[in-house]
Length: 429
Image 1 (cartoon, rainbow, N blue to C red):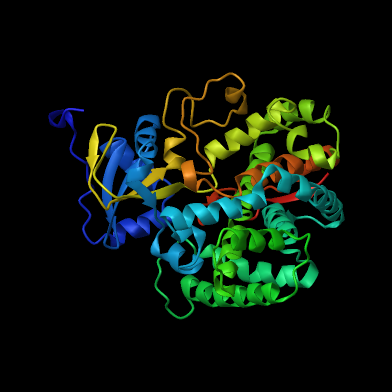
Image 2: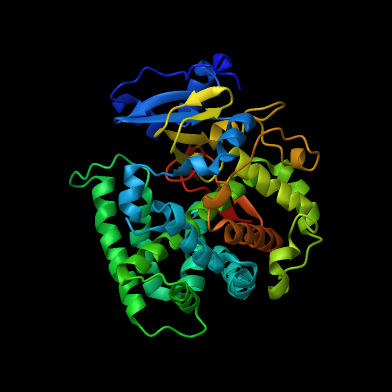
């Protein structure tokens, strides 16, 4: 592109960025308001960090097509809580090598291995929901379910051990995207203490003899084969990331999916016409394809629409290693860039502000959808999340009829991932 035709990088003019940071953490429409004012690319400042926000297919494809010129980046709160050894905080060959190993835990063969236990957990949850008295906090049940899946399949934890880990994990998760000031009693200070307890528990787990058939054995053995020496702290931080990758996005997607069905009864009726024709439970070794796009197109359209309207994360970050041209705008070197998914998913032609799953069967969605990120840093837990969402969606709808409790706050709390503020209170009909 001719340099004379480049557009200047729009800026909000924020200097220190304290007010911008507060708005970012508390206003779900933070990015959209500024896109409306400045266009598809703008720069602002947050607590001294210059950040460029982008939306739209052209800007996103331009950025992600230049992988050699960008690297992963996370806010300081995430970096501290994940830890310096974590895969998420690594770049270059150290990231790629470890990622190839860790990705085995979410391969097709691994999912087949997990499927029988996940199916049993879905059945157990439906029995539990029938037993509970209303009002039932469904979003909270979804969080327990998603955490139980990853903690059981990867770590082999059950009962009290799993519940104790979950309690600290919730404290840790809620402060991931927060202002990293460790004032006594603040969410970040509580999360730092919870992180220490989590790592202590994980290191104790790693100190026990590993079953030769366990997933942990696969992970530690593969790392050893490629010559990556891991201390207990290093491996514990990888497990902490795995718990997050396989839990937080799934819990959010499950809660938001059930919320949309309860708020849109006509969509539930439309979906049940397909669900009623599907078998439950699926054959475990075929579970990852029984409810796929071919066999359950309406279910998949619903999941896609839920992830479009309420992506599990509002955006993901990259940092430029050299100047880049993105959608006709020059972005300087060493700038953090956020791909603003929540805003971008509603940017395009058509009624993108409305919830309408049928659009994905009619090929009428013009937005660029990347709910789990893209490229060599796509969310590790993507395949497990999609499997859980499909299995739980079919299992619950085949066995239960849920009714929403009136008078509750159904708006979404955005951080660390979208979730109904009053926990989506329901009763079993």
